[in-house]
Image (cartoon, rainbow, N blue to C red; front, side, top):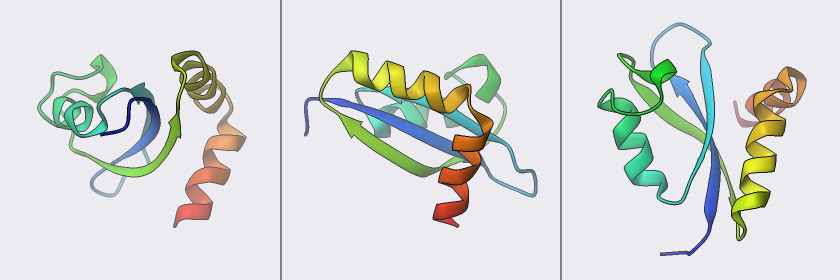
Length: 84
């Protein structure tokens, strides 16, 4: 397993166009937590699927990128539109 950090985007399963941006060291474990209602408060009670991820060696880079994507709707929409 790589020893870095992931910035990821989750999309809610179903009809709504709801997304969540986060960062983590263990992507598989983190998504499992989100889907078992033990993740971030915003994600509780919903089922999510991973739609995007980026890898960074440094935690500070991952945190900066997460903040940038979370707070810039245009960038988030651009990333999501390039995937689908």
